Image (cartoon, rainbow, N blue to C red; front, side, top):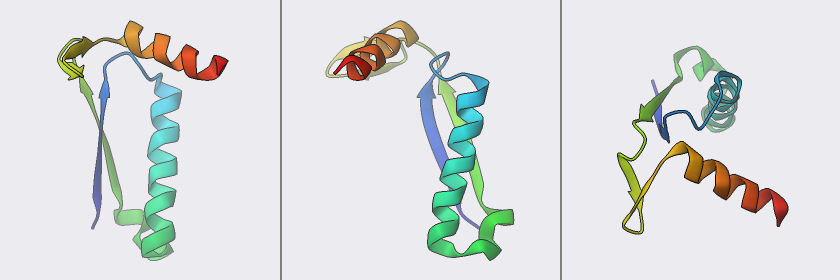
Length: 75
């Protein structure tokens, strides 16, 4: 049975967005494995505390991620 783990920064994704992530990742796995595997496909979301995650030597928090998201939307 497959287990997919998704690590995210706490308070970046809403409960509805996490639900959507779980559903879409499950669908992606089933598209590869076959529908019979849906009931045994696990998707787990780990929320990492803000500032416990870094990229390029800089710590990230939810506000920084939301600012990045707005920049992408504007482009």
